[in-house]
Picture 1 (cartoon, rainbow, N blue to C red):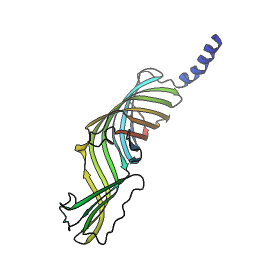
Picture 2: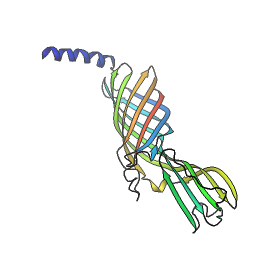
Picture 3: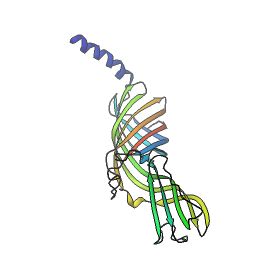
Picture 4: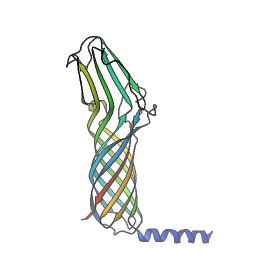
Length: 254
């Protein structure tokens, strides 16, 4: 038993010794990178899919000991998801520009969900229609992560903490095709949906980083633990954020 204890201690000591930092050191690390985000806990597995986004901000880190440090950050992060769905509104009377989005009284709405979803319909004989494809939900958050780092090897650190996200913007964007007064046109659809989402959310950041001199590569999984919206749709009631972020930063010693 003693031999096993001594062997374990001998294996751990080189790791901690190689990862030692100066106690009381303060550093500032601006970061920029990308996110890949999705919605988790949705009963319909293929209703949402991952989308790419942007992240930028900085971490302020204080060394508590030679192995552990505490950091607090401020970031702007793009999260959300791609929605695997298409929506078609067809009209039995010719719509105008004002009613094409709300739909006049004589209209029919169809929504198809699932990967590679599409709707076949007769564009030529329809008096008018509004067809949305490739919808994406873009959520812009102001994020404040507070994490503890364990420096386990030369330049290698593990990260765990909690993150508060405040919703700054929310838009649903898609490709749209419309037929109004016999004229077919296509373009981009953009609708503000901020009122449909909670203002605040909480996530658990779990990550790893590697530093070489003053350059640091950081990868984090942001595990959402609070609901981001309250809806009447039973399929959306438990939707939470699920985001992977990878950034490149430069460390300044203060």
